[in-house]
Amino acid sequence: MSIVVVTGAAGFIGSHLAERLAATGHEVRGIDAFIPYYPRALKEQNLTALAEKPNFSLYELDLRTDDLSEPLDGADTVIHLAAQAGLVRSWDEFDSYMTCNIQATQRLLEAAVNADVKHHIHASTSSIYGRFATGDETSPAAPVSPYGITKLAAENLCWAYAQKDALPVTVLRLFSVYGPRQRPDMGYNIFIRKILNDELITIDGDGSDSRSNTFVLDCVDGIMRAMEQPEVSMGETYNIGGGQEVNVLQVLDILADLTGKTPNTTHGPKRPGDQRRTVADIAKARVQLGYNPQTTVREGLAAQLAWQRQA
Ligand SMILES: NC(=O)c1ccc[n+]([C@@H]2O[C@H](COP(=O)([O-])OP(=O)(O)OC[C@H]3O[C@@H](n4cnc5c(N)ncnc54)[C@H](O)[C@@H]3O)[C@@H](O)[C@H]2O)c1
Image (cartoon, rainbow, N blue to C red):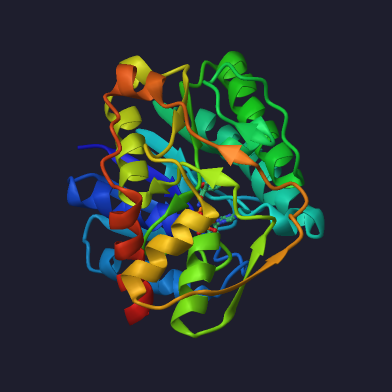
């Protein structure tokens, strides 16, 4: 088994991935700076199961400033999930997006080269495509938010290091992820929280915006497949998404059914930088990596609801 560094290990996706890696016997080194975009207490909860794993260690380090040589020493694979996520706040808090998404990526790449890492897997986003993210990986990159722009810059940094230092890189463009531990700023988390608390839900626009959201364990499966098949995935970019397209109104209908409560809704203006339709074309990951997301939206929402009920 190998040594795998997971950045952003205390976050939503990173904590699930670290659990899967630890369960499969890898030595997992998590890095996280507990950036206060959402409360530290939630991230500490994300780490509860990992704290008991002898093959997991946490390094509380900031990728922007701290020495990264210790966690990267002898590492086989780096999976870079740490970032300033969430597009809405990227208009007002640009510094954090610029430094956590671009500068942090550059420092990590330098450290990966110095440590002679064998495979660097970079988590990118469908936001790099812009308003419509419905094509394959060759679709033009046209981000419409500062978040998407910083994430595209980070992808490009990876390819620059791949060329300059022969660093073996894979880029995974994740499409909206949901499930237990979803960040509190994300749509499904807000919908569920408000339905459970009988609060008013403001739908941005008419509710017809659609997504093929990815259940978090399907996303983890996509990342694992890229890691386990380096001979296929190195030098490649893959869309990693869910298989089922739903719009906001359909999601609210499913949640009404699962909770037995009718959501109290109103409509507000669309948010600047929001995407209209993101439906992952995952054909390349299906064919090359055998990626095959299994979770229906109803099953995934039920799992997230159960988690939010007990949180
Ligand atoms: N959640 C989604 O729907 C989604 C969709 C597409 C892409 N992504 C990408 O997936 C990755 C993980 O997203 P998430 O939803 O789990 O976010 P998250 O905020 O829950 O996790 C990210 C973690 O990175 C850490 N971090 C940020 N900057 C850091 C730094 N400078 N040094 C060390 N740690 C730092 C944060 O403290 C946080 O715990 C991100 O790269 C994001 O852009 C997420």
